[in-house]
Length: 305
Image (cartoon, rainbow, N blue to C red; front, side, top):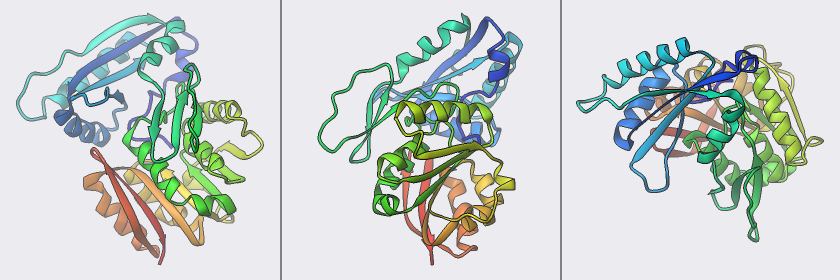
């Protein structure tokens, strides 16, 4: 499933062209929260990052043609103008050689710690692990899920909370993107992990990351549409880091995939959207155990009543 702020899905076109068009701008953290809500509501996908303790958020996207870059720029300007008074940031478009793409975005992805033990390490950076560290090696490429986004961070924290259940049970990662959450489940001790996504490119990236972490034999990874999810298999833990409206729409299928006594982690939900998602899950017999707010995003851990 495509997450709320994933990387643009023009991969097939990109691989046949020599140029990409990099669109970027920066905005204050306060306005970024409002902008993220507008982006999610309008299904506009951007990559975001912020330096530690910085009050500035950077937005970035790579597109396969100048026309698509200009169209996205126009859409962004319209959305930004809806935010309370202030200067509209300069939205830049720069043509780059496709072969330079991977090196360009790597400047913004560094080793970071999440939760008590999780450490996400880009494959191109060195890291000296500390006792108790669970290191996840990542090269997210064109798929959503580097771990920097608030939704993914929250899922990693919540997965640590259910680690005991992971070690002896099974896990389904719905909308796996780069595979980071499935990899985390396996590194937390789960020997029965399934990762699905409706984007074949995401599955390709996820399989590569699973291999990098030496987990090819522990994680089953394949393309699947949530709307056609088989109802026969149930899991001890289901993680769904996808759009709020998708969780609501398919709450019956998602909850049916959780074993009785099992647990469900949901994310990709803006704070104002969370009550509706919670209501949908409660309607299928679940109760909230805990929730995490990370910026404008809220994630929840649920279990059967």
